Image 1 (tube, one colour):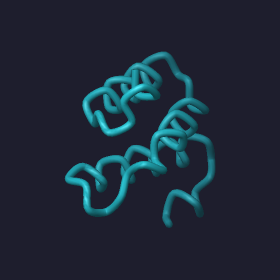
Image 2 (tube, rainbow, N blue to C red):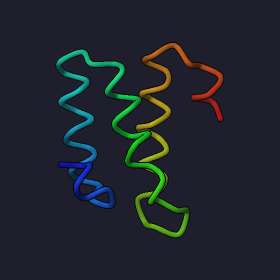
Image 3 (cartoon, one colour):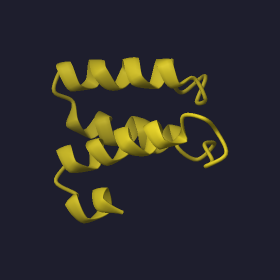
Length: 68
């Protein structure tokens, strides 16, 4: 769903929650990484997208990238 509508923050969050519950740490990182390019700081939920991307990076052990 989030691939078809990358600016749908609710779909991104729902997909992220499902990935978390089924233990798909790579998808926690990669799904958001794919959806991130169309987002810019001028969009209302940009901060939330950055947060869930950082969480996905952390879950994959990429701590330095998550801090950025």
